[in-house]
Image (cartoon, rainbow, N blue to C red):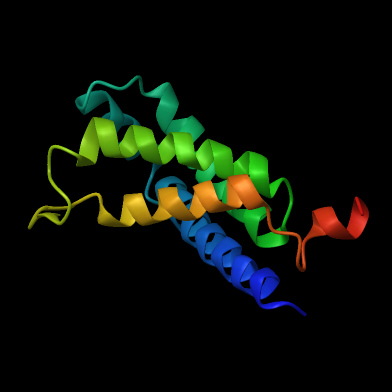
Length: 130
């Protein structure tokens, strides 16, 4: 068991769990609320479904180690969009009503690392596609 494999697994699991929870909350809280919020900031409501699905399904895929590089690449794009469209104007630490882009930036960097390097240790991809 090498340190890099274990470290990368930890990054994959943390990112996967975080996105799974974010996606789950969007659906449990009523996806219509998320659709409305997207529309209020000038984004087509359809994208709320796409984002919530990517977060939920992508989070599960990362936890299991399925398509880590591809899912992570989608998350990179998602995080760039979130930072540019929503969070950048608020600032790094944000305002009392809304968090800044510090967490989004951390997610982006973790996803970028995984998109570049993958994560084979304890992954379904490695098990079935050696």
